[in-house]
Amino acid sequence: MATVVDREKVLSDVFTESTHSIERRSKKQTQQVRFQLRSFYLMGTRVDNIDSDLALRIVRHYAVDHGADRARKIFFTNVHSICSAQQNEILKQCINLGDLVLPDGSGLRIGGKMTGNPIIENLNGTDFTPKVLRMAEDEGLSLFFFGAEEPVVQQCCNRIRNAYPKLRIAGYRNGYFQESEDKNIVEQINAARPDILLVALGTPKQEIWLTRYSHDLNVNVAMAVGGLFDFLSMTKKRAPLWMRRLGIEWLFRFLHEPKAKWKRIIIEIPMYFSMLFAKKYVPASFQRTLRKAIFS
Image 1 (spheres, helix red, strand yellow):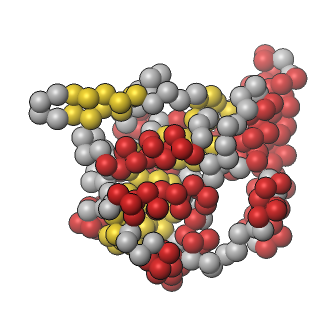
Image 2: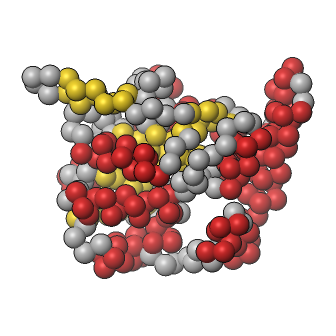
């Protein structure tokens, strides 16, 4: 799929960033529900700094709210997406126009502390999405899984059926396709009529795809979940709990997938922390020049 998005369409994807308000409309009255979020920006990329309880309440509200004229978009900000957004302005716009943008990973925790915005809770998709699955099971909501290789997404759905026997799985579709197939994929998802769509295409493809088609998808909420299906299907192992608690899960992934992860570890992490250091100690007049030099 091409990584170019119609800029006007992206910008027309209305998001009331200042109030983070959600409106539920009916024929008789309009009820407005407001969620107070503390948001900040790391290198121009938005982070909604909230805990998992509030995040889950917001996702539930989106999932059961049939008053919106588009799919609500949930994104996760991590070191990889921040670094990618430095070189891809469209990706940055897509993330910043999300309806909820959650902090993912120890890099965000360090970045938040260095910029005076301590992260309340690490809400990475691998840990947060199972809470969404449990909520969907309790609420009788249905899900569609879109992404990964065919055997992986199949195994993912099979394991989820075993773990959440009452959860309604509306359908699934692998993540290998040509741009010419986009319309058919949207039609396939809409035909299944899911309440929640999980999109695992990787950054930046998943954020751009969801932003492009959010007005065409007849789902209440869509989450961009990266490599989640690999972990849910047990195709890939997660780091031991002690490594996750220490915030070094990235090291475990690098050791197991050096060819796939070397760029993130060797290039992106040093870039990220260089820019954090510059933001704290380098005069603002030189920061833009330094950012261009690092990310050019």
